[in-house]
Amino acid sequence: MKQILTGLDRLLENRIRLGVMSLLVVRREVDFNSMKELLGVTDGNLASHTSTLEREGYLHVKKAFVGKKTQTTYRITEAGQRVFAEHVHALERLLKGARP
Amino acid sequence: MGQLEDGLNDLKEIRSIMERASRFLSLSGLSGVSAGTVALLGTAAAQWYLVSGGLTLNDRAARTFLIADGVAVLLVAAALSILLSYQMAVRRKLPFWAPIARDVLESLLVPFLAGGVFILLLIDNGKMDLVPGTALIFYGLALFATSRLTVRDLRQLGILQILLGLLAAAVPAIALLLWGLGFGVLHVAYGMLMFRKYER
Picture (tube, rainbow over the protein chains, first blue to last red):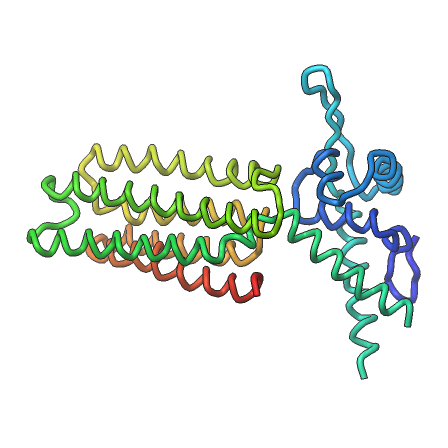
C-alpha cells in the first residue's frame, strides 16, 4: 500500500481514515460512537473505513455487549502505528522540501 | 502544488483531531497556574503556622492545621481547575464530559486513591514529615500515567514531581519547601508554558 518513493500511505490519503488513525494514536481505545462524534462523520461512512483499516491490519476491533447493545471499540496495532508515523514524517518531509 | 496543499491540510487535520481527542490537555494551562497559586498560598500558610508556633511537621499540635490546610488546597485547586476547564470547553463549543475525561479521571484516580490511603496511614503513625514527599510521589505517578492520554509535557512534570517527592522523603527538614516547589512553582511554570504552547 505504500508508495516507495515518498513513504506516504495510500490508505491514509483518505481524510476519514487518516482521522481514525490520528485518534487511535493518542487514545488507547476509542468506541465507535465517540469516534463518530469526534470526527463528525455518519455511521455507514465510518464503518466502511474502519473495516478497511481492520482488513489491512492497522487496527484491532473488539465487540462487547453492554446490556442489549453491542459496543465496538478500536485499538491501533503496531503495524498501524508504524505506518501512521511514516506517513506523517513523509508529509513533513514533503512540506519541508517545498520551501525555498 | 495540489499535493502540497493536501499535505499541509492533512497535517492540520491530524493535529486538530489529536487535540480534540485529548481535549483535556488544552485546558490545563490556566488550571495549572491557578492550582499552583493555591498551593503556594497553602504552603505559605503552613510555613507561617509552623514558624510562628515554633513547631515542626511532626508536632501533634500542628497536625489539625496541616491536614485542614492540605485538604483545603486540594479542594480549591481541584474546583478551580474544573471551573476553568468547563469555561474553556464552553468557549470552544466542546462537550465538557467527553469519553476522554473519563479516561483521564480514571488514570488520575487510581494513584490518587492509593496515595490518599497511604498518607492517612502515615498520619496515623505520626509521620507527618513524610506526607509532603509521599503526596509528591503519588501525584507525579498520576501525572506520568495520565500523560499518555494528554500532552507529553505532563510526563516531564510527573517525573520532576516524583524526584522532588523522593528528595522530600529523604530530607524531611525541607519537605514543606519542596512541596511548595512541586505543587506551587512547578504548576505555575508548566501552566504558563502549556498556555503559551497550546492556547495562543
